[in-house]
Length: 382
Ligand code: ADP
Image (tube, rainbow, N blue to C red; front, side, top):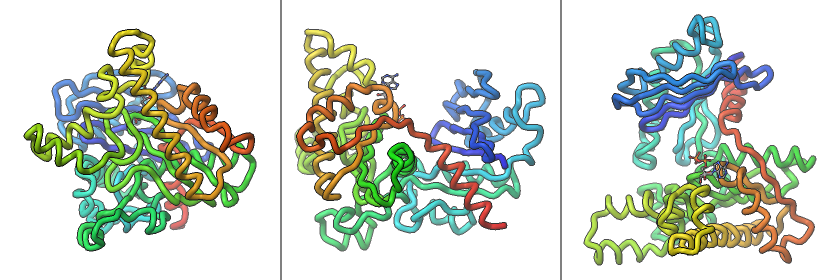
């Protein structure tokens, strides 16, 4: 069976096409700058790379373009769209309702829309993508795989904030966590590599990309994670601040005379590695700049130190939360490509992790896990 995996952002649609029999990716690509005259399609079919300008006003047009490219008589990879047996959508927020991947029905679409308020930049795009697929690939079963669902096993002591409980009851203000598909994927890979059942392991997974989060995974279940009500909590990230005394927000609003929207932009888009280094949100640039003896070089070194220190602090916290630790896993852009960060953490935590804790770099593959989840749900119907 062939499964199409779709990841809709506000101005992009990423996709991968899998043959589920051998779990091989047969095509992948992205439509970018949706709604702009500069919209383009980049894709790889059978290993060949293409890059085209396209006219693309919305998610519906983007998915039509993707399906046309997959079935193109010359450059395509499948003869007909009828060969697509299922569609798996990445959906960011499933709140407390979705504890695992779920077959999409009109009721499920309604629920995803209800959680738009919790993920205003992401859930509306996912719904546009789902609706487009309903029309373009009529009759094909669709499955939603949520970033939040893996962390639904967190106990209330880990997911509650120390706020009046009525705000949890009224608005659902609690810690949800994100990147769940990635944490789940690398935790399962780690169990395979360690040749031990995941049910007997205590793992800490570090997803370090542009967004960064860690998870404490005990017996295969997430018991804590660094992101919270939104992806702003936790680690120092590319452009997000991570943990912060909430009083800083009021202080800045008052002293800089700025609006809630502006402070949100500062915390989400101008902070983290970018804000600290003053150079870039990209670890490659910061590493290069850190070699310099000038002010930006000094700031870049400090940014790297702060980034690593926060990771180490959470390793200590999660070691305590699980009362033990078998392995720490590094993944995503920064985690996979900078083994020096892993080595540094291992050295710094020398005494507590000693020889008993394994350190592993494992490439993440969220799309593959979405394809597998989609296949398992579709298959279970027959
Ligand atoms: P996203 O969260 O947007 O998917 P990625 O997982 O691609 O982001 O991670 C982006 C980060 O990974 C950037 O900080 C970038 O510097 C880093 N990165 C990606 N490739 C490399 C590489 N080859 N060497 C060093 N750092 C890399």
